[in-house]
Image 1 (tube, rainbow, N blue to C red):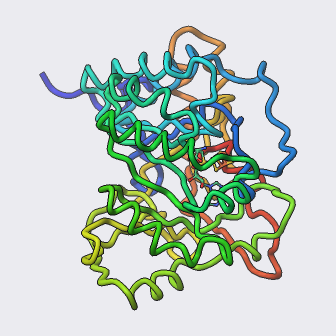
Image 2: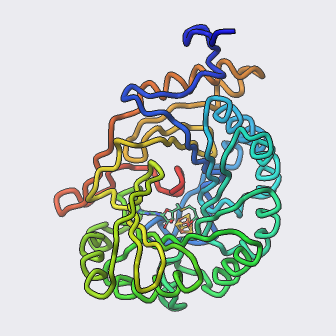
Length: 344
Ligand code: SAM
Ligand code: SF4
């Protein structure tokens, strides 16, 4: 039997390739815009969250994710807001894990602030999650409180330990913040590497109104890397996930250090990812205002063909790259939505 020609395939099973030849295999899903913290670079203190009625149900999120998996998504990351604050989110994780068992999905993972991870780590591992990203910008409880506005560092550390005890590989993500944690990066790295965890540094991205200017927060990772290179032997690693991180091996610690530099390095050529929000909006580029509503086609028909057609139409418009700017003339968000809406 020969393969069906491309244009006789139903939209529901057609692979997602954008106009620049990039195949989409990675989906990030923001399951809620809410969070139990208020990291100052991410959210305003008095954030207005979406009305709960606008959110997709967990069953609808499952259907949406499954439609993407049928169209070739191999890696799926649940994020937010804080994914673990969405009521009953573990039922979604449990249900999506069937795609791991069937082999349709290679990886199901999550990005979390870890405040609630101690309660959920064992079940996440039981659902087939192997790795989790935890965001942690400092090991100083006072600074942690200042950055998150009211977070307790102890809870996060307990969450990380629970995840490790459950056998999950933990990667720490830290946003580099001028005059706040930039001097602490070596100790954060030694702590993470000492526990066998990779550390990835992230540049602040200009997303969403947060009530203060970005220029006060931004420190280029090129500067931090140069400082680290004076103390440590950094060797570039070739590996790439098709994502924005570039990794080095640190000889002195034996660990892996990543740099996510959207401001100083254009990583769009190899982009294999798209994002959906908890209201069913598809964003094909983190740095653009483009958006496609998938909630409507999802709800209009129990069959996935309408939905898949809407997905194909949006992928056909995926922008070539993004254009973030932070400087004194552009001291306002390049993209008006917050990171907590699209997920990191
Ligand atoms: N609440 C979870 C957490 O903090 O890991 C998941 C969502 S959070 C939006 C995902 C990632 O985005 C976190 O690592 C966070 O530090 C990062 N982030 C949020 N706002 C950012 C910004 N303006 N620039 C760069 N990174 C940001
Ligand atoms: Fe919440 Fe994550 Fe944003 Fe911090 S970075 S406010 S933990 S969503």
